[in-house]
Image (tube, helix red, strand yellow):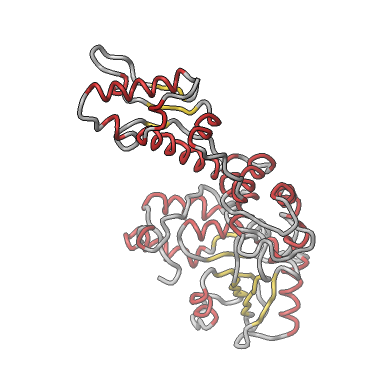
Length: 377
């Protein structure tokens, strides 16, 4: 039996083509098509018809497509005196092939993005949130399928604790190709479930100021301005301390204590005595001597996270109270700034760092005031 003539009317064809558009969009993102709300925007011929008889006719055609098994109609609870199209109708496609055949729009070729998404959701050993993130960051390598690339990403966790540069990681994962992960730090971080990629593009540069006399402690300083000011301090506030600024530090502190993960540069206006330099390098790289070590940075959640990260390699590291206490006084006096006033609105709170002073005093003060204070204040 030939199909009814109404099936080829422009109004019905427009509706069917719109449904195919929705199908194609869903396939392109690797998702299932959701139910479509039938309203004046989707099927104006029905909802904008002048006469009720015309509306009833269009609705009967929708119901006929349901009878054929092409679609499923869902409406709100029936009400006396109201037609189906007045009950918030939604339609779900149940026979994609029939609708595509009628519109002469065959299923589109699978795009490379869709193949990537399918490989990620089918093969990546991660939870849904991580897969969503990775699926939006397609990797392509000539001669390799999306599935092969994703399978190699599953090996990333095996390298997480090794002091490697990002291009070294890429070469080990992707058949000797070192540039695959360039500018893909967010993808790496998502897979490893860390805030920032642990593999640097280059070694972290440690700028080190050695005091003139034998040092008795090491102080990591977050910001360059504060570091430079500290190296030229004449008040004695930093007496006996090695001052360190870590340029390019990204939160993976373990590589700070490796020869490949860090490059050390000693300030010329500090001591350059061979004994002091060797003592510092031996402490940093070999860990044979226990020296008190502190961190001083911004009084915000980002600074606290750096402190926590540094403690992964320096177990004894604490927040430097002589630096933080004056900042804390200013914060509690109402001189802090709101997160959105300094581009810090995306900083996520944390409860513990492992440092007693930070956990018991600094973090509670940040949480109580809801404000931050920069180190340079």
